[in-house]
Length: 469
Image 1 (cartoon, rainbow, N blue to C red):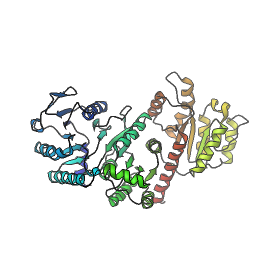
Image 2: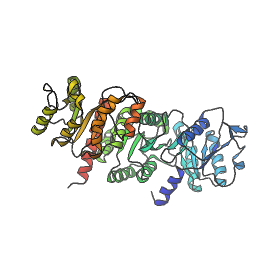
Image 3: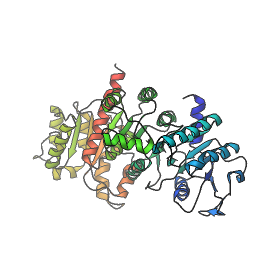
């Protein structure tokens, strides 16, 4: 992508005045758009186009595209029947509008006739210099830029800006991803759904995120790739900038391939080849939305470890055994502590506690303050990262939890190794904000969290192999 296109996409995802062709009170699309824009802090204006309404959702409407004011409108969303789309695009081009979201369905996902219709629209847009997102697409939320043209209604939580970019070839599935990230207290830079990709592709959005200077982690829900050689090049560019790409790639089964084709017209490739390709280029492939969210969250807030040796700390012998079994399943190394570490741990733990890894500090040992234990584990020569016992505060008066956590949280600012809190009880909305304000990722569901740690270790290993000393 050349510099001109990079700048075009920056403007595309940062609109100020938005016309919505087909805005109606008979469906939820425009209502959702206006509501999402308000939630994002959007300071611009909407211009609904509806020939039969004086206003839509309390916003004055225009009878036709021709009635829109000349100049100033820098974006349009189109929500009309597929057979009326080309006419709408012609009208928008006549008004000088060159950035368009096409929400409408009825194109390549429906078969050959729909594909012909889509190809004709793509050809027109190329000829007119129109940047088109869609069709069959919900749009985007630019949380870092306080802009949104998003027709979906299922993204919940505060629209917190952050460093995680989301690319979704499935709008509804990616809404779940965005919601889970936000509810976990994690921030999003740009969330884009790409639909059928008549013009703008997932690869275009990926390159934009790699180059935008805000996104540090890319999470994607993919049904197929349009340009595999370009995707390889982008993966290497992302690796050079230490921007991990974490993907759910559907289509392992025959039914999955069929579902992808019927949804967006995407073509899924040979899965063995796909797995090898992703691994070769450092792409992290995950199996579930929960694993995707945990992995993206960990990468967004945790530095890469220098090696693969994990130390785990809990207050239960039973949990220590469970964690050991899970780590073995995920090929995470839990090395024995060095002799000096074991001796130092004995000096701060109850006499009946054993300095093993995973470490059970026991119900008595954890109450003495975890700062000394963290320091001892951090100094252990066999340890590269630490998963540490944490108590999520229930509310602002939970001084006991604050005292426990902050006894070692102060050390995190100068920690030489990644430290990840592992929560011992349910995480409230208050606790999610608490961890976010401290800039911390936390493990809430241990199996997915340990999978995320395995991915963090694997990605760090991939980068070290690319840059041998």
